[in-house]
Amino acid sequence: MTIEKWEEIKIMLNGGFTILENYTVEDPENKTSVESVEFLHPTLGKMKAEFTRRPRGLEKRDTYSQEMESAKEVARNYDKSPEVCEFKLFTWQEGREDWQQSRSDDFGF
Image (cartoon, rainbow, N blue to C red; front, top):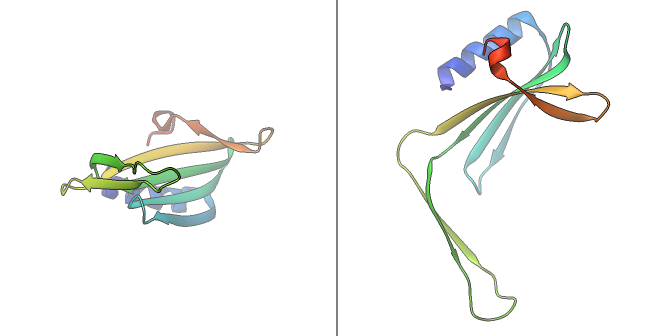
């Protein structure tokens, strides 16, 4: 999914549904950004649309020391090309008190 398509989905959600919450979570260590929009669907109830952006990882190297209880070092190399974007749609499961991933194709996203 592209950033432009995500912006279109947000406009559609704002125009057609009651927005409950809109937030972004940044993870600087993994260079990941997750933008979420929680909304109320008229028949399915509480839902969440989630858009994740992260750089394309090329390589991850773990370096360990020979000494016991020594810290390990993680080196990551990222591609210089555009970010990897992912869209997920979730439905709130009242009985389990948890989000259940739904197929976004069923909703026309």
